[in-house]
Image (cartoon, rainbow, N blue to C red):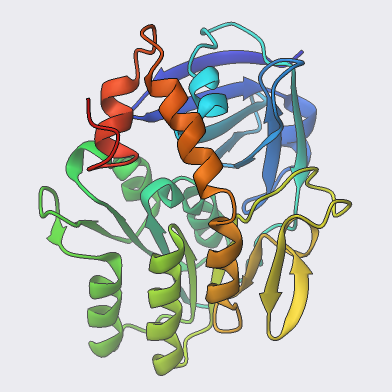
Length: 294
């Protein structure tokens, strides 16, 4: 079974896990994903690749606690094992030297745009990174992005760090000021990706987004990850996860993502009622703010 080198908390509900899977890492590329199962009874959870260390054969994933399975992941100790880690899955992000490329990461999307930024840089691009979160305490990877990007912009909704506002605000200013951006990759919450795609369409800048609809097997067999792109049905697991943001039907995507919200909330409520849950306070504050109050 894959060995977990370390599993470190880096935010109120955010963990960084490094898994020793040398054969997987040798084949994996930026933009792909893996499916992790904590134990034999656990569900299979897709995770974006947040880092690849070819020398040590280590895969990095960044995850947030949003339900029972992700909460279970936090219990894996450094040096422990997980049942399995399958991948690499999906298609790698398209990379070439455009001259200047921009990555935009919001929330947990800050993680998967990092290896993409690395790939853009290695291809010879000038890289602009824009990352953002609701507040300073749930930001991460500032140092990592800063080491790759030629220009790094940090945003928070509440103004506690960097620009007071959204990542799209910074992007609009850069485009209006004439930044010669030839390619944009945006990963984050659906509303963020929708706004970024709308903005860049006006400026006629090619923009790709990474979609994470509900996924079961990750190999194109179940059809659960259907998305509509350019009026056609695509499977995010095998046709993506990257798609042209100007062609994605975000309304359909949002509808599918909301399909099991009631069940998710019930599962979360049950988790919070567990007196042994050490994550209760953080879950209430950061996952469902204003809800599940004691």
